[in-house]
Length: 135
Image 1 (cartoon, rainbow, N blue to C red):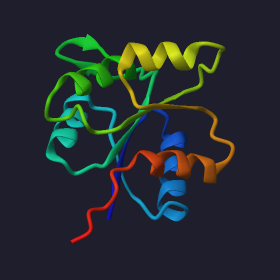
Image 2 (tube, helix red, strand yellow; image 1 turned 135 degrees about the horizontal axis):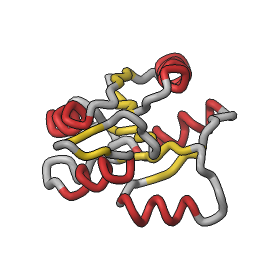
Image 3 (cartoon, rainbow, N blue to C red; image 1 turned 180 degrees about the vertical axis):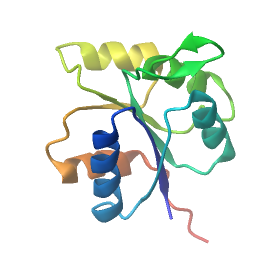
Image 4 (cartoon, rainbow, N blue to C red; image 1 turned 90 degrees about the vertical axis):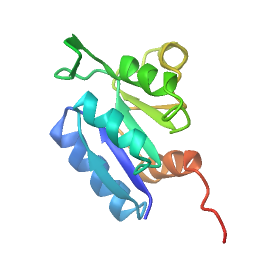
């Protein structure tokens, strides 16, 4: 089963996203906001895509505060994780933010919160999933 990693610090958002992805998307879900764990999970090949909250408030890596932009840059700079699709999640949905966040982070896509249309949310994620290999 295809697994999505949710990197999000709001428990309500984690619950909502997980429920939608499992029930509507037929996907498996993992969650962490621990940067070291995010990097390990991404390197392990266990996840097909990462949903990354832009404004993480408690994530620290090597002594530095990390937000979703910085974590995505780390993932995209590593040859082992650079091809894992990352979709940024943010409540900052001002004009121009989408382009700015995508260019700053190297992320593959952007979804603004709150997620209103759950089917569009699932479709946007599924569009970036690596297609299943036929034997």
